[in-house]
Length: 121
Picture 1: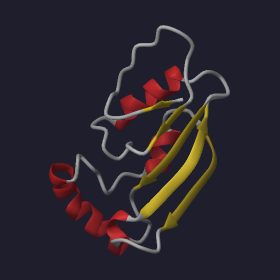
Picture 2: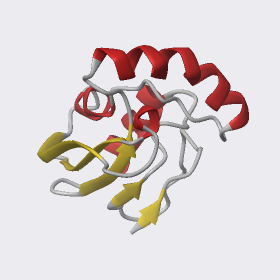
Picture 3: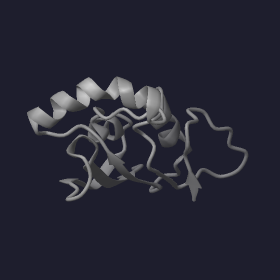
Picture 4: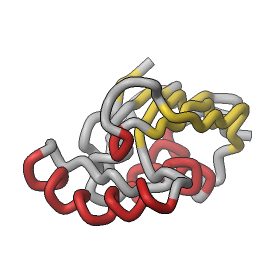
């Protein structure tokens, strides 16, 4: 199993991988990174993710949009307002299951969580 960081392109010399990450919200071009993850996964391969992202609560989402620039600069490139489920689904991975929930601790702007397994079919 490989762990993704900020890379959007990986050179593969042997067989493809299974992948896990908690950094889709910090990657500069998540669509390109997810295309690369899809390319690297073998058929039936899994992409496991746990990410914080865009809240469905309009009040929280408003603050996420307002603060995202600050967290990008001072929070390791973090985008508070990314819809992680849409990003993963756009890569053509099937998600089984996609869980979305608000953590009970932490600031609400950074604690709406997406957890799932993307599978290359």
